[in-house]
Length: 221
Image (cartoon, rainbow, N blue to C red; front, side, top):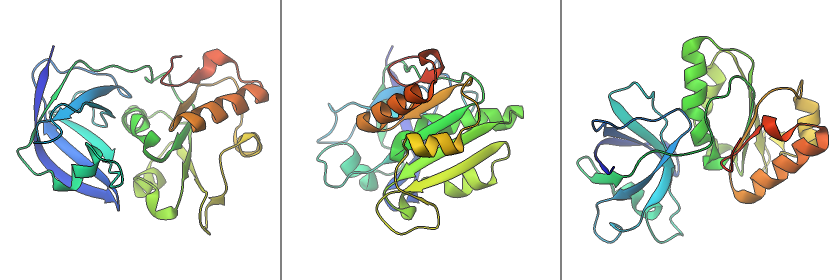
């Protein structure tokens, strides 16, 4: 089934990331963490579908996304700053293996935080505690929704910055960092980010003794 969405608002979240709010079409159902292939009906990119994750409450009247713009990449995300209210987009049915499996450790890199926004919001609404967010970025200014994570009860947030001096953890998410940060291996470990990041985190967790059925990625549970 094809859905048609109309952009109601767009606003910046960071220097290169935007929050987009659409009306919600009838029959558009999804679970926190899922995504859709979205095609903006704008000249030049109408045929270019890209997968983006819904960050809104599945029960809300709107459908919302947080999308990072890549100005050096020709295509959809390059034109995000040019989008305005009234632009239409089409999507097929939502999909995705990253869903809510309860409190756990959330490992994100850059825009890989997006599937976790709706899941952690759901946990906050339900009073779930014990979540641990470890969020890697190139620079401090790249940290998406930092104020939100700092204020969210029930979540311990750790920020890892690779490319500049920082008051946060310097470096990358690796086995040494995870061994120091994680308490308990018998819990869900959610991973999302670039392919190399996902592979490295998965390998580190396996080396630590985490079982595959506790590792959640877009490849499956």
